[in-house]
Length: 274
Ligand code: FE
Ligand code: FE
Ligand code: ZN
Image 1 (cartoon, rainbow, N blue to C red):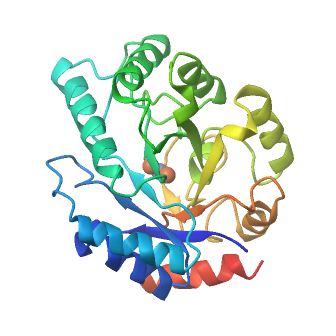
Image 2 (cartoon, rainbow, N blue to C red; image 1 turned 45 degrees about the vertical axis):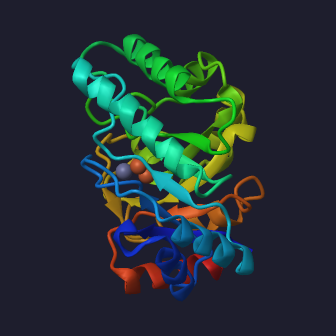
């Protein structure tokens, strides 16, 4: 059975996101830990988090995925922005313990002209400061499209970050189909080749989640513009191969396509039909 859900708004509360996911035909979901452009997060209502955990258990949910705000940039030139990244991630990871054993995804960052190596160094330094032995959350580095000075559009860069983190058993990777395609990995015509490359460079045991998005732009265009499933350059057939691939079919999948809830329900049903 495909484990699939979509991005939902956290403003309705935790248990309500679980109910919404079920209503859309899913058994998981993704949410922003706070306003995606940053800012203070609402303190977590423990009874609401507990209610979600019960709902997840009763409905065979796959792990849910919390997404860090886009403004979290561990390799900014600006020291205050790097501090914000540390404070935000630490606070998010503390609050994630209300939902023990789930996952937290972040964009590795943009080096803004300082160079990829410097970026990798700063990102791993953030992780070395933010991860703790006793946390139960798995932190996922998202594969990026390579827009601007984004770090993490090459598998090698993610591997280098992971290698420099002491508690690397807490780390995994979330593969975003739009981003890797934009990054030049041809998951449309050579899915097996891309997965072999991922395994060689990072190791498939690190692959913990998929963001399912079609792309408004052709292979290698480094644009990061998501499209509805089947309406973009990746195409429906390729998504059929992705969700049924023996290496991928057990992973939780999260849609981040430009849709309202009706559109999400349609895409969930479509992908489950494979
Ligand atoms: Fe993302
Ligand atoms: Fe994504
Ligand atoms: Zn994206």
